[in-house]
Length: 128
Length: 241
Picture (cartoon, rainbow over the protein chains, first blue to last red):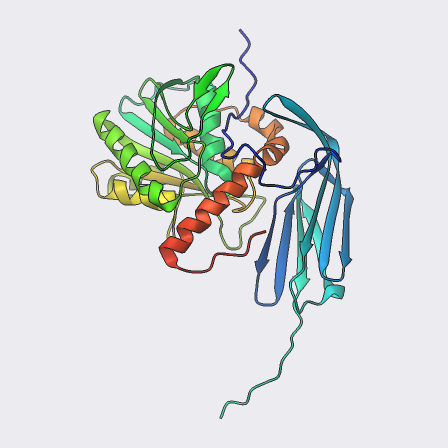
């Protein structure tokens, strides 16, 4: 007898999604994280099933938006209801005191990494 | 899964629960499926949210115990808050004592500084010297320095005070995103330790979908981890949105 296809059966701790998926617009909300380092912020998005050419990043004042088209439709079934998703989309508020002209992004293995340099503001304090 | 040699006779316990990169959950779920293990019990706790999973009309509790031959597995689909983590650890210790378990292996994930994403590694931490040889025998790098918090820490604390040695296999992973790739490294290492052969092609094919499918569990796990970290260290957790 052929072995049943592998499926990870993990119970979701909450029935309702913690993420803002938009079922009507077929948009998934990707996981993201923002981490602070000494000279920059690192903003990451988890974008599996996405090709680099299908990602659009836009910055508008204090916000950064990432949109991406999935390379294939993602089907999800919750409580017997099937939903189809074709896009990822998320907008994040940018940290303050950043050099928005020097922001750069990389996409590797379905993870988008956006480096946001900080601007040095303030003045030197003389040590007596 | 093909068995290369007979499994050792002594009872071994494997444990997986949601933590960094969901490495433990992915790895243990995969092994349960491939070993075709049978559910033999469950763990309940009054402080856990009353949750059940129904599949094909069968009711599944969130913390389940599986068995096949000399191998026991405990898997949790729920991340734990700091209050439940110690009870969970002590329940596993009690169960292990009652069932003459000689060794426990915990699968988890960890973030490392200067990680090479092309060649993620697995680090081993042992509670008793008797397991140190195992690290050398299977070429597992020893976890030399770092801090551990959360359910991993609760389990290590409980077992290091007991006579049952524990080995924690930490696969390098992305701490905030589901990381099935890191799980594959963990599964491969675990297979070597258990002396079994595991074909990981099934999970390889589903890496990207698993990452989407388990976003919610990752979010929930991070909330629990932050709760545990705050309680343990009192430090402000890393910013996560």
